[in-house]
Length: 472
Image (cartoon, rainbow, N blue to C red; front, side, top):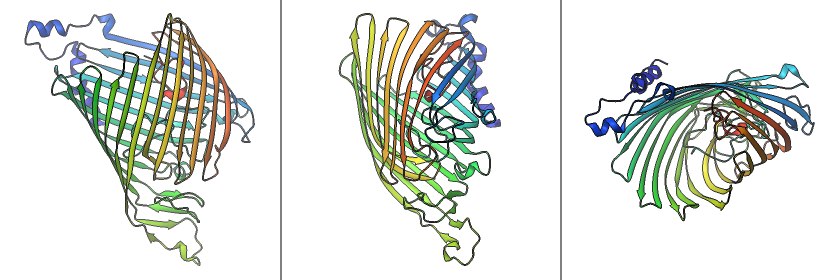
């Protein structure tokens, strides 16, 4: 925490004084004016209350039992702006109450620190720290945030996170990222990020599903803007995950993808993942844009031993056995299209994404090649109404996993401070190892969001959007 505090001091030095480096000319002084006091500070209080009725909710005793849950997300946000940067602190805890079993109430802390500082006309720095602690729900129709960690080499923005074989987990998940950018010319920007992640179940039983995993990562991104309609983006990502003991129950998959016949612990597991890719972004018109990309991902896995979880010394399989290291290459492919249909007094936006990529399943400590598909349509009617239809699917072959989710949502925003929403969520999970969430589930929901300040564009969105974007 000492290093983090030092970085915050360095990044916010300009923001605390209301100005950046001393201007060297009158033009620079005009370009970087001091902000009025009323624009420099933002303090926002808000809350989101959601009522759910459906299956696969907290408190249900069978797969298709219909129950009800109530979710409360209070939030507080503080932001300080200067002419050259800003610092944002937000705390949005998540509370779930089920009338069926009041003793199964869940509480999940979510804290975010985001500091941005411009160092000069062409350079800048950023620091982002995220801290999650508590009971996280993995029900596909509750959709709380993204799965913890994410794994070495996993690209951001995948359609659907991995889920464990249990509905809820007490966990700790935190990450810190320090970034630096530089414009080498008007058309070229370089970004460099380094960081560290730490994730684990907070109890001995929870670590059987989510083992301790921690490690550093780095990203290097180069963006070349070629004319008004085209950009080329080159990306290199690499990360190392070092695991604590990984429990592999019978019927699950081990680190090389084969089926585990008998339960055991895998110790000394580490995964080094790296990716190299390039993307082409093209604006066909002012309303239609596309993106195509490809590359290669390489995962190196190493373990020390398999250790038995039983004590019967008469069985030969109980002996400690070394696990050979392995290196695997995976293709990276992606495509995105976004189309805004021109309408009078209305807005209609379609988008779709397809991606083939390797991901790290942080619950089992395995790397899998997965196909992700998503699509959405957002129809805005006037300033008050918005209708959203979205769907996504993720599938892998080794191990066999299918995860499909969809949502229909109607949003009514009467003012900048109050939003109502209602809709339906559907999900289908079919994992190779039978678990608590396999099968079809659904939920009907209605929610209300209010804040003292202006609500974000995600005010009517589900908790799957991260849970903190609605408070701005």
